[in-house]
Image (cartoon, rainbow, N blue to C red; front, side, top):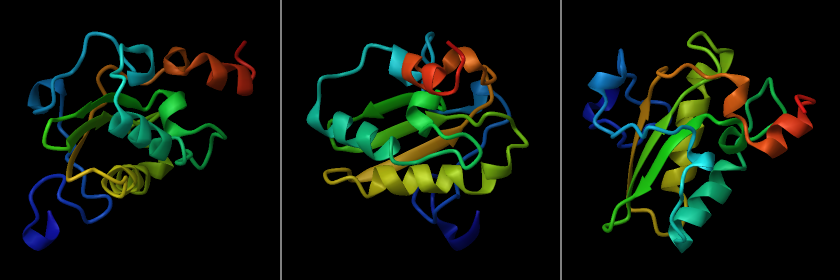
Length: 141
């Protein structure tokens, strides 16, 4: 990575991209994506989710959170945030943009001290990962 920054330390788009899920330092939950997991009733967590809902895949008119691209979002006690995300496909045209936008949106959320964003393609994205609202908006229901 350029600039000698540690992983997830900014730079918009310099996300860690592990080869497989065993290489990630973020614990991968059994159930993905984040919007179908039990989520904390925490003000900072909710503000981060709202920030993520402002980011849209340029090819799909649905935000990345409801699209199911955020697999895991964890806010630590020290306001450090771990984000595990995917893309609709490894060769997604937005691969050079969405991770940086996501990392920036989380980092710029009031109250966040630091961010570690990692990419994974395990399990691969599928339309079943979308929220009910997203599937309805895209005509999958």
